[in-house]
Image 1: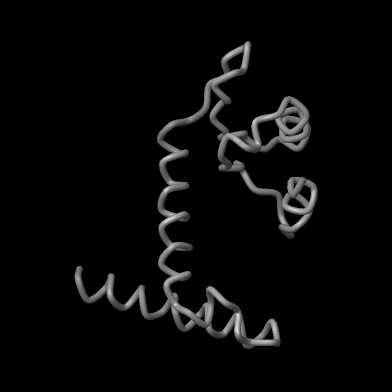
Image 2 (image 1 turned 30 degrees about the horizontal axis):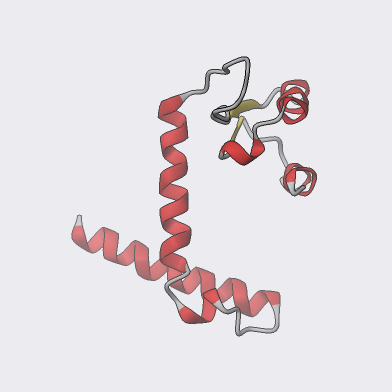
Length: 107
């Protein structure tokens, strides 16, 4: 349901779409092929014709999922206390900077 909204968001076309098995549909794969976007979507277990995907690129999706998990630890972001989109985005930036500083300090 969210695919049409998701694909319309970026200002420039992405090179690949990293998605989970929920986006494994022939219509989505055909639309991505028409847009010259690589589909990095693992096939569902009940798919009759097995499809291949780039496993190394799909592993990068894990980093994105972990980052959103870390952001959701912050109560203000998880419950979205801020009424304005600008205030919410500023909280996301502050939380991102906090985690980035922890990473840089550990390195």
